[in-house]
Length: 224
Image 1 (cartoon, rainbow, N blue to C red):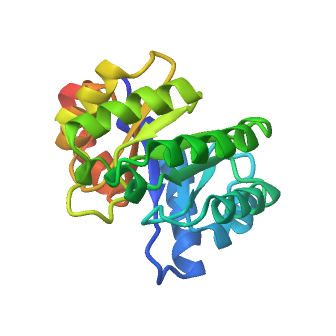
Image 2 (cartoon, rainbow, N blue to C red):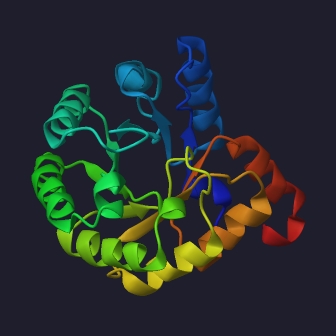
């Protein structure tokens, strides 16, 4: 039986995060063997140092949390993160452009961003903030980003009024190419919800309540 820890990006993105808290995050990630830690860009170098030879990846966010930074600003963030040897980049799309039906802008943004990341062998997760999008907008994102060669489509930043849902993950899975994975994030606090998202098709989970979730699986003996 697959263990839930293998799906988790152990996350700390609050703007008041301290270096001590980030070090604790990395210690926990090593102990529980989470897939990655997801941290603000300024902590990438330290996390890479603390997680050396652990198997835990280091992820950061780009254009976070609102996504409306200029494409050039996002590219600068991406390049600086790559210089710091980040493994994975969670990029917030310009959903302001989507809400204004400016799909040409959205396509231009992704066409500039994806080659820079992929040419350097990094994993790219595109955050669409599904909680503020209509079903038609989510479907259009699946079409656009599915064709663009992203590694993951991610549901949420965790900052919108609505985060991940089983229904959205199912919708995304049914409308994405098989090679595009799904990261669910936002509001995942229990093992039961985490498992439901995985069962719906998510292959990564962005969580700050990671240890509570893992302990919830440990208490559910039928899942071992």
